Image 1 (cartoon, rainbow, N blue to C red):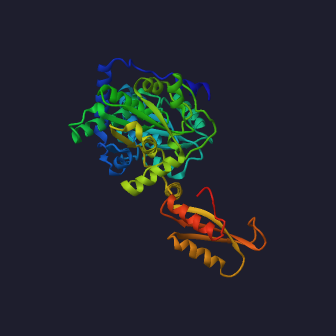
Image 2 (cartoon, helix red, strand yellow):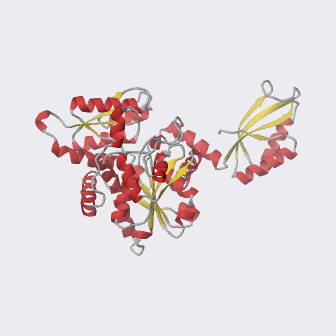
Image 3 (cartoon, helix red, strand yellow):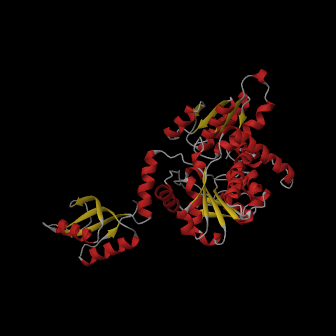
Length: 437
């Protein structure tokens, strides 16, 4: 990390967090700004998760915002706070940002709504769907370098050379106050829906990459004397978890790892987020990619909502830790829905695997007529459905007189899979599960 990037992440200005009167005024102003440009996102009771977790659960669908995520909130407030300071005689008001995802689209949309120029710097390998979505919102897009840090450097240089306002995705107090409007909406919506339930009985879980959303929620819940705030991190990107435990800002434990939840794949949280979360967040909850995938599949099947991987992290965290929320009311954010069709297809397929609805396996059988028919009859006898069959008699590591058959099967869950494997074992087919659906 370059010194300039370290400065941006470690030296952002933070107001007095003990001045609750000023914080309330700031949140009220932020809510008014956001309210001028977008409607409140839906808060909906979830029968599925309430039954599974054993407590009343609501979902906040930020994925249904105009840009498909909560990020536009922070961008609107950050631009609105800077715009009055601009001298029109010096040309149009310009903002710039570096992002490979939702922040880019949030800044582009906010700039379009407020009549500003947006200049967005993306890594060259940014998926075309995200680049195209940003361009459709009127932003000027620059493809720079192979990693996000190189795009950051280019954006900072552009900011200095063109007198453009650089908007960081999370380490900016105005951005945090914009994201806090999500939690402010939740509190108002919940109070209207359940006026008999005290707000101190309501807990919140949001995804954490850099921590902008959960920092904002922490402030809003503290000001309202509401319940606990939790963050959900992907297990390999645990900067916030480590930092809150050790009481100092720390990077992720394992550098160089990857995740399906690229929207929260942040290696180091900012100083603003650390200071706020240290005071307002109960704890971080870590989740795996498979747990996120299972949550995504649940959203599609049970809530009829499409989300991106990062957007389902809060649901994954709550499903992994149901005991934490017993006796409480709970709001989980579905923070983003920007996922391309190819990734969605992969996620659904993997989700079917991790929830026991799809099985890849191999079976060994004699290389003689009728053996494949017998195998398929055994599979049919337990009502498993064959999706694919590959018959390998040349390269399989089996005896010369045998062949190996690879099958993709549709099953009803893990118990059904165990029943199938037992039947095939008893019939002498030596079934083996293949990993990585």
